[in-house]
Figure 1: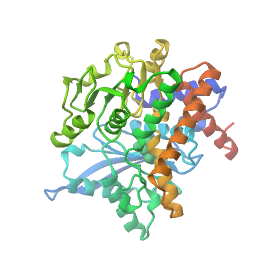
Figure 2: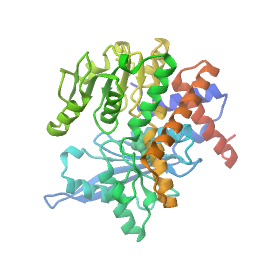
Figure 3: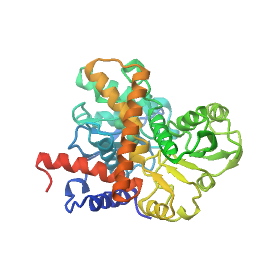
Length: 408
Ligand code: GLU
């Protein structure tokens, strides 16, 4: 199977072909890769070492921007692929940022909250030279949330002896976070879905959705879609899912998840079965490499809404395209998170506080404008949504590099 990084680079190469760009050296390799090995004291009093990364893939359009992931499978290749994705995402959404990503090789489920606090602080102590509102701005990602962002902010501000709220986004409201940030990724994806079904003449109440993942992205997406009358027939977490052809009561399912740790409330299915459901919309909202060359022939959904980063490999994407299944790419569908991160960064730098309505309106406009831009290129070039989105994103990075004198 092609790796996540290989898959992303293949998409970039296809985008270059579409644009007629022969030399894309400026984007083929990350600008900066930092690996750190740092200590953190465990609850038993012993010191343990953890491996962490921060990759700045491209910052021609602004400071590197992107989350920090805590996961046992974190690797330099994965973080690089995600950082490249961020560079493309910020470009597609016209945000004045580049693309970065960080990660720590750790399974958060094996650690207490106190240990996770020491791991978060250890990570940022090792990388304090990198993080700055004008250089590299972290945020939450898989298995990190506003809690970890608070610890990272506090540690950085202690090291630098000053307040610098714009150094990190996804903070809680009490520490200058932005209204709407916690559900912004899901909300952004929902706005894209609304545009898509409007164009197709579909109705929410007749549209069935299966959501893989019940975390910050999948959970909120299922809830928002359910609240807007969509028929959410399946949802899963890392241990499996639930299905009801008549539509699940998502509120109950998510409440059960809160009290028991697992989704409950319908027929039990595996994550693999969820991907194969005959639904209008399949929203993989957890991890990368879920739909690959190996299982793509089992996909029966009409539309894939890529809410996770990299859930469909490049090989699987072209097969879906040939089969007439639309796949709306991650750099578009899940960009709502970084869009509201940008709003948070702007508010922190200006001292302004925007209302939730203002943020929702601005987010909706950013997402629908980007969807329309991508739709236009898709039609002009006669290509897939994914190739169109990558081409548009690459074009803006190319232009920035060219103006800086860094590209042919
Ligand atoms: N981790 C999120 C993403 O993959 C958000 C990044 C950010 O807000 O900087 O887009």
